[in-house]
Length: 219
Image (cartoon, rainbow, N blue to C red; front, side, top):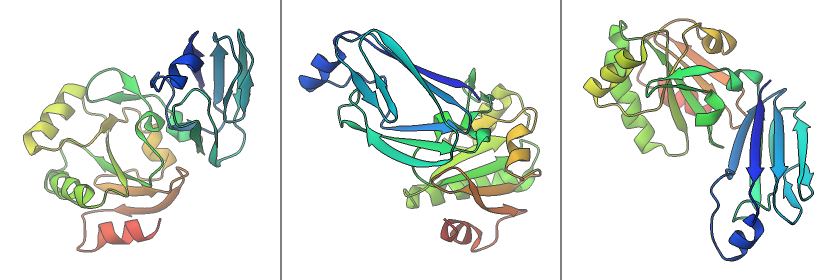
């Protein structure tokens, strides 16, 4: 697993009391099973982040050993609450991004069910279906749609999506590790993840008339 490290700067509690948003800890944090959350508290008061209670000038770590959705208190977020989603470990796999650099599936997810759209630039059905899926996503804000490209270069992925006027998030699974873990090996394929990040339904092949509705109904 990987370590998610957050530093609480001095004066954070005072800033939140004044109604400011420090914007360094999310309202929803998605981590993988086996990941660790580390909080370094540089503030002069104790802070609580879900299962962690960090005293001033100390660093506390917590390793996640159980999947699930865990809401809890969070004194470093203006809402005073956070939701930690402990998903299967594949959400922490390092992937390339179409905009450059690396990211993880967990970095892009939130607390909604997630539809993974697996595609490639050489896939003709994908070219037809990606705009359709984007339009579907706009009409269904209750789900998060993330596209997963199988091994193309980031510049090619970005150009391909631009040509289609598709602005959905695009991750690149160069080694096929994410698609293997979610059991969608070919293109075009879809995998619907529940709010806890686990796979609840998959579809391989071209879209049918009711494919997206059926996947959504499985959540």
